[in-house]
Length: 282
Image (cartoon, rainbow, N blue to C red; front, side, top):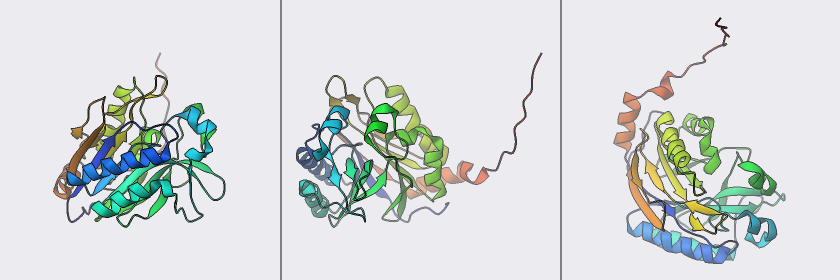
């Protein structure tokens, strides 16, 4: 847990406005943003929750073509993603992007899709903690966590509401995570919670957090951006505005990770706290 990676890793968090149900269009937008991020030095790019179909429950209820079909092994061969695969190959970057995935066993999940540097595409993680009646009506919750390894960095995967639960980020840290990647969909009016949750997950676990979010959209489903990278003490290294498309880039520094974990030893100091007692004051 206390062994840092050997080299820095430059990452990008993206915010943009996808078109509901138009996977081909959104994949092309993602490809453009991935190239922009790579040109700024990023080796890993994180895009928002459900970006490939848009976070728009009315469309997801009505249009099954918004789903990406996955094999039993999680492989996704959908040709609509070809521009994104090409961008990952051409720029030699790893991409994590949100999608609605239809699995071979019939489950529909809110997932983080991984596009590797060879353009291979897989459903890497299924959201475990679904938010509200809309998501619970649409999706089946995932049952396992996931850790992605990129250039020696162990990176826990979460999706939006997952990151509202301290135990989700802690499970990633317990698996040796140096960072936490969180494609998200925060609506207008939730900026305070958005900014507290992911800074807290970084500080709780002395790890970097990469937060991507949609921005804009229609009146009923409008999102508030704020894409950011947080350092292991919970401070924003970079943050986008609450409006407008943006790609923010930061470098995860193994020396800073080691410094913080040496100074703030919460991960080592934890212990079972035992039973509780109740006191009544009169």
